[in-house]
Image (cartoon, helix red, strand yellow):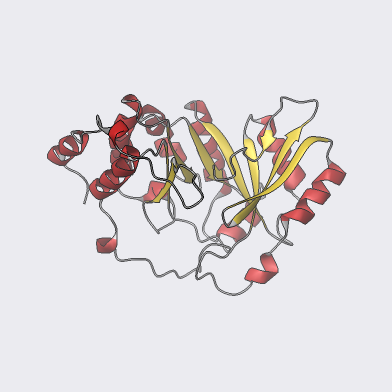
Length: 276
């Protein structure tokens, strides 16, 4: 259920003045935990072949945290030193009334208790929500996009429309949002497109990250056939492109390639923080 006016005001009244009085969260390696990813839904309007089976069984909606509960959870982490929140899914923008959550969490930005509020999206709903996201303090987003070929895009996502996603990217840039493209490397599918993807992203002032395919639950057969090691991708890119910097790294369960071009605006393929 969406939050009503009373609930919103009660959530906004959460006392964060004592943030500095709470010890920060620290992992077993002594690292301060300052970045939190929160899945707001398991549902998505795509059925990407490396992510979901075509006939997914989703959680009952009654089992999901309400928007108010998600706000309380995120706020609790903010009081313990989290400075960056990323909302994810599934596809976060298909969650009903999700802008209410962004609007509520934005108060932490205004209070100086949060440095960044962002999200990862497939881009299908960006044309509708880009302006509101910017108004609620979102400054940059990640967009998942594995190909610029409409037929391949439909095959990879099963239900997706490339033109809709590109329109969403246009709307996001028009709203002033910085964008990083996430592309999953798929053997025999998009491995010949990486130079084109990099050139397209950099030409529009966007970063791009290549990500190794990894298991994400029930997706059906063919997972091993999709696997393309990024060590091989890195070697191929080094042969085909003139690169100033090519970095291959791991970040949690995924592997990433970061690329910086020479003789250009210095855009990069990937992120200095592999979790970003």
